[in-house]
Length: 353
Ligand code: AVJ
Image (cartoon, rainbow, N blue to C red; front, side, top):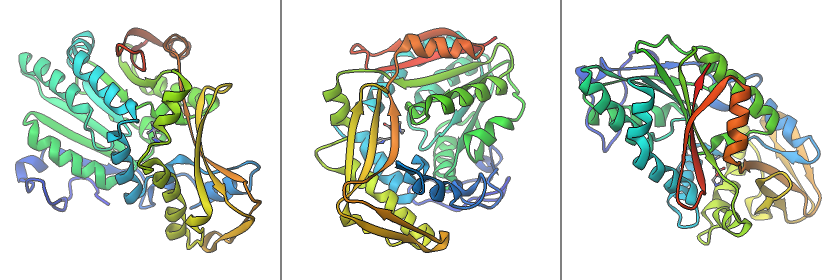
């Protein structure tokens, strides 16, 4: 993992980094040498906790090993998976409005991943900054150091006035130690409706943290997936190419390799449906028979009844008014929101009081 200012390895397909580029890049690791999912406490404690609960659950962050991140990128391209392209279209269309509303700003992004959608905002802000002759600062935060570094080099290549200060770590830790801003203001970005993975309580705590991290007058830009007919929602999580099923099952192979386990992927089935009452998609892995699985490194044997499921993800679907009210309660006053013509996805800009 990359530490402050040390030279980064080359990634094929990208221009080799130059000294000039390196001077515009700094990546700090907040994981203290531990891998992403082990940053908060004992390695795998959350897995043991989730699998010994009734009903069984696993944290969605275990989707994202290298294979899982690759499958997620494929999901974003699926015809049925509307959120990524809908949000990207909103950002393409309104990035200039957003930049004009906040004025020149540092951009901080939680869960930056490949930073693809962020480019529209970087374009808009770099125009704003050019006219004021300033530099553009981007602070991506991601648990995957590999993807963070790779996208940072690609961005430095494409944006000559950009400097990137990356943080490898969880949102929680990064939010608690954001470096001071060099510009008059700062915008924290949280795109892709990743906020939907949080339960209402977790969401509450998360918004408190965002609000605490911002100084009065600074901004929070949030992407949220909106309520819509069940058939559209369920299709997005049950695609005809079965990529989402592979993504879900990959969590078990990730656990097998991480914790020396023997989950049999052939004996579990992907299951995703819309829970109307909770307004959320639930993804489960359903045990096809009574069976046991062992995770040796965690000293854990898990027994499954036939048809018993593990809840691997919730993906909540929001309404814009409700989300704006929640933000307001946290001292984040809605400035403006944008949506697509179908009202399938929303982007909300709010400002810390
Ligand atoms: C990245 C959490 C927003 O909930 O839609 C996609 C993840 N899971 N297909 C989502 C996901 C299944 C995605 N988020």
